[in-house]
Length: 164
Ligand code: FES
Ligand code: FES
Image 1 (cartoon, rainbow, N blue to C red):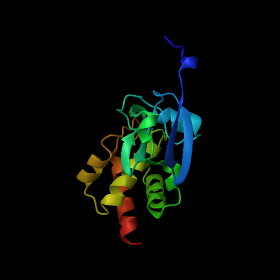
Image 2 (cartoon, rainbow, N blue to C red):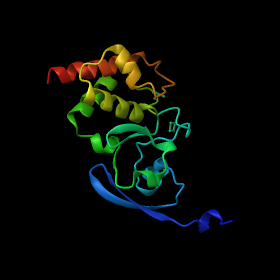
Image 3 (cartoon, rainbow, N blue to C red):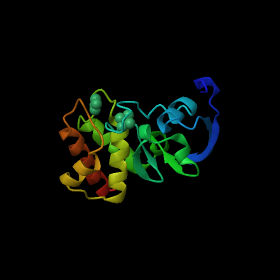
Image 4 (tube, helix red, strand yellow):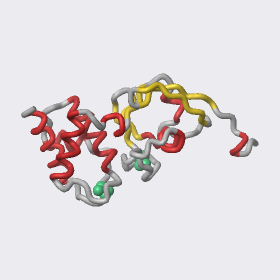
């Protein structure tokens, strides 16, 4: 059996935050590890690493996915977007501001994943009900805020968008 340092690497070509990139990874490198360790994307957090907490959420071809349970080679030819790639989008600016003003951030560990899921929700549904917000962030766990403030923040962001 090959030792870990003898496993052959392979190239993965994809678009990360609007730029074409190539990374050399093993066939079993997770998307989280490729983003964090090979490409320096620190907004993607490692929490449970079992697809349950949502801290590692990124957009793959526009859809929120938990990157810890995707293998890096699965994004070959795809579009991956992290918080870094959404920084200057009006919707993300409104969301960030609403999270801050509604006290939806405490330790901040869940925040990048929450923002990504909330962004995808409001991008596709500009006027969500509280129930729809709950569904939109159901894959993201926050251990600090009790969720209420996060739901309020997303609804507040939706109102901000409506008046722009
Ligand atoms: S770290 Fe990926 S879902 Fe928890
Ligand atoms: S703010 Fe700490 S886990 Fe959500």
